[in-house]
Amino acid sequence: MTTAQTTATGIQSVGVFGGTGYVGSYLVDALLAQGFHPVLLVRPGSEARVEQRDRCTLVSGDIDDEAAIRQVAEASDALIYNIGILREFPQRGISFHGLQEEAARRTMDAAVAAGVRRFLLMSANGVEAGLTPYQRSKHAAERYLQGLELDWTIFRPSVLFGDPRGRMEFATQLSAEIIDSPLPAPLFHNGLLPFGAGNFTMSPVHVADVAAAFVAALRDPATIGKTFHLGGPETISWREILTRLAAARGRSKLMLPAPALGVMAAAALLDRFESFPITRDQVRMLLVGNACAPDDLEALGIDPRPFSADGLHYLEPRAAA
Ligand SMILES: NC(=O)c1ccc[n+]([C@@H]2O[C@H](COP(=O)([O-])OP(=O)(O)OC[C@H]3O[C@@H](n4cnc5c(N)ncnc54)[C@H](OP(=O)(O)O)[C@@H]3O)[C@@H](O)[C@H]2O)c1
Image (tube, rainbow, N blue to C red):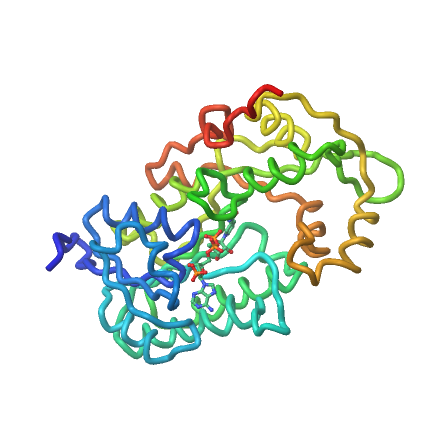
């Protein structure tokens, strides 16, 4: 028995694909806090990642498992597709096309078959540029959803930050790999001359604000058929992001211009290894920037948290040597 209440929209149980990851953990918290009952597809071995599992329904299975997808859909009044990856490993069957397009389509088809009309899709800011397989697969999933007879809402966040809860997150990763490194921080730039080095911009948005946006949309039928760009309150440069991360770690950091071509060349050789920190496509997407306004979040009644010392408290200043 659950304590979930049926909302004015008739939605009580919410199926989540990708509920065990970084964003997923915040989605589950936000759903529970607002009286929804999460129904999660959970890969065998990932059960312990759901902290509040005694308050959720867990359906065991991989996203390739049609029966498990059907079970989630049939137990839900709305579905959220949140599965996504940052890099692909085709030799292990992990690809952008497979997880962000084909699998997303399977869950949308399952929604139609089960008569679940409400569907929320996690996409990403800038996907319409179609620069990389990451962006193209997400954009294809958006277009497929828009062609179905479903009550859809699409979310396109900029880069997310917030306590990673033991998972991978933008600020923690940059802090570990760039700020704490003995090497100078790279101010990437196009071409050989350092014009505009480190000036490309992003709008870091707090993960809890993104989760709140999903839940707000579930309660608001006016969000049906709309795409929301989710940016934090400020658009800041890569240089400023590194400066704030260094401050959060209680240190200053030497920064030097670095031609993106050099990183691309290294990534061309090494990005098939998981330990190499960045792929060519990630550098490409970094350099075009990832900026969007906070207006859509504010329209959903959310006051977005800044990328500031308070918001980055989880990075903790490093101990004095
Ligand atoms: N993080 C960002 O800055 C950012 C920015 C914009 C958009 N997004 C989007 O937000 C979404 C969530 O990202 P995240 O950062 O939370 O990623 P994450 O922590 O890696 O979580 C990925 C989720 O997908 C699940 N998953 C992966 N492969 C699966 C499979 N074969 N079958 C079933 N489930 C599978 C994972 O399950 P396990 O726990 O079993 O691994 C996990 O629940 C993605 O769509 C991402 O593109 C993220």
